[in-house]
Amino acid sequence: MAAFLVVACVIGPAATALPGALVATLATDTPFQGNLKNWLIAHSLGMLTFAPVFLHWMRGSVAGWLRIALRRKRGLDFALLILVIASTWATFSQLNYPLLFIPVLALVGFVYRTGYPGAALGTALVAVIGGVFTARGLGPVALIHGSAVEATRLLQIYLASTGLTLLPLAASLTARRDVNAKLKQSEERYRLVTENVTDIVMSLDRAGRFTYVSPSIRNYVALSPETLVGTSALDLIDPEFHAIARERHNQMLRSHGVPVRVEYIGVTGDGRCRWFETCGRATLDEHGIPNGVVGTIRETTSRKQLESELSATARTDLLTRLLNRRAFFDEAFKLVASGVDGCVALLDIDHFKTVNDSHGHAAGDWVLREVATAALETIRIGDTLARFGGEEFALLLPGTSIEQAEAVCQRILDAIAALQVNWRQDKVSVTTSAGITSIKGSVDSALHDADLALYEAKNNGRARVALAA
Image (cartoon, rainbow, N blue to C red):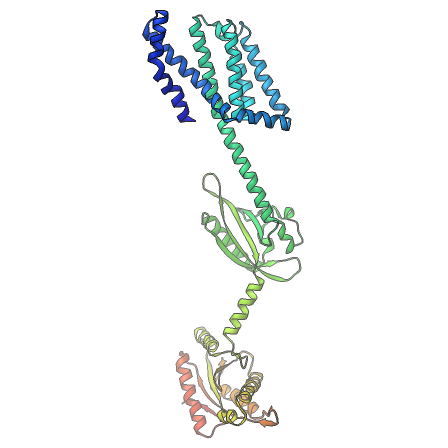
């Protein structure tokens, strides 16, 4: 539009000014300089007035508005159009009052309703009606004391300034309508998504109060989304997680749009403990200042259970269901880090190879399970029993003296020796040897000393307990 106006209002009149002024001078015998000035001013103002009008007429925007207005029966639009015609007629058909502002008021209302088409059609109507009455010597323009040329020029200035006033208004209104239409489409898409997803979509203010909650919240609490608006999100979170929830909420506000995640146990309507994960980020006002948080809430109970099961599997010996070697080291390191005294013992089944050779490896696996069960039932609460590998087991005894540890291990050996493991038609019996030492700062050193004590028990006849030197 700007480039078109430059060509129409500046370049066009300038290109025709010299020949036009020359012809006017020869035909009327008037000064060339005056004709040149009048030509430039008159044609520039005329093009400034009518170029946007003709442009929108050629684009069909005016005809398109008429079709839509007739089809949708926009009575207010036609009433404003009649008001523009009537106010222009009343203004230019009299010679008593300078009421040039009256048509402009009517035009503003008409353009506010119709945009570009109204600006083009309204300006054209004012130009035609005002031009006819001015040519007849009527209207506010005729009140000036000047020639007909000066009156015409004043009318052109009035029409040009009116057009330049209306076009930016029409552009702003058109842009606003486009934004509102896109916003409405966006809201419809947002509503469609939030009403049909299982995740909860929510927004919070800076204080952590709900400003919006999607209908999927009904899957977890017996409250409507409307009821939750204005309440604190902490009301739906287990009190144990309030501190971390507040910290993450403040982190979202500080992160300026970077997503932040937080996991917690939610308070649900069925009384069950459920895990949830919120992923949210800050929303910013027009000054770039955080004014709240928008995010999604997803139930993660199944994932948490799977993670727990995988963690337990990673720490468990699949054959005996005891802790594995890695888990034993974790517990031993925790004991040393806590500063609590204790003992560690290594237990090994005597002549286990004979069981495998005589009855098969399946029988050996069955014996290992039975031995693990018997030992597990004998140890005290707080002790840790693990399968260290093959037929070897490790026992961690926190807060235990060497004498107490020896007594515990002897009970385990007695329980295992009393086993009669049924395998098909046979009964399989085994004995166990054990080596014990105290933990004095180093898990590896303690296990090394216990292993030496175990070898001593084996060398001294097996089925016995030996203490590290």
